[in-house]
Figure 1: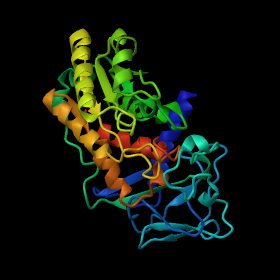
Figure 2: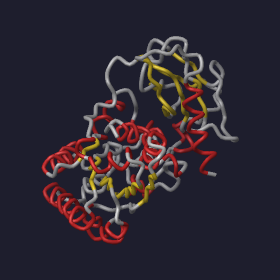
Figure 3: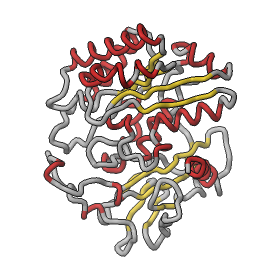
Figure 4: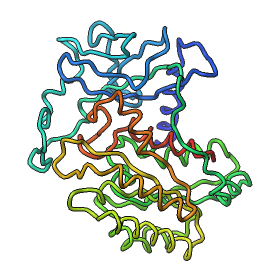
Length: 345
């Protein structure tokens, strides 16, 4: 099953370039996602290359049950604006029928059936890169042992430690979870190495629970590299105060290094739906704190927060949120993956 899914991911990249002229400044967006509320336009993350009109489909990967939507019948494309618009009789689901549509300060627990998965449409296309993205400093110098193991063809054991996002929340296939996709990429680019990745994350956790689970989820695994990705639950209005969040991260790092000698990457996260009742609207502060702790402890830092916000300049929150609250959809996991890939390993 895994080989079929990996092949499907590769097929997405191949299909993306069909009809596009290759260039050193030509890049690809994979599975750019949208929800369509009636006739309101939805924006692509980038302006497509002329002659590379996006084709919409119902799933991130092209599967046997995928619906391929037709331009002019299901949607209209405005190439100048880089927007798509649902037609009146489109087969694309209308997001206005989502139970959370139009609500503010909503408590998701009061609305059974919430979630955006049935409403997404996805598109691949080429675009002309005018600005560098992701904006991410190379971090290989902070990961010398990891780099050496990869280049030396040695075993490399990665543990992904965090909350429900890291656990894979809303990814439609395990191979699309951001850290698994990155591990697969490392294996592809370093074929002599033996890369394994373990899910050490638990849904709903803050850094408080992270400390409590550290032994069983991370230390007992004896990893070579640990991705630490907390913040979404810490930042909630009933979450973990910022000073304690920073202290918890520092303690997690110290214990990992003392017990295993593993190298560490700290990963920031993105803001949840601003209309959600339980968000504190302070994710920027928690992302900055994550970066600060990484710098103070000579850890690598993956700046998902900033790069997510760059994509979100043209996207609605609902376009990227699988549960309409605080879980990335497959395209959101791709954003994480691209940031990790830009670390330079």
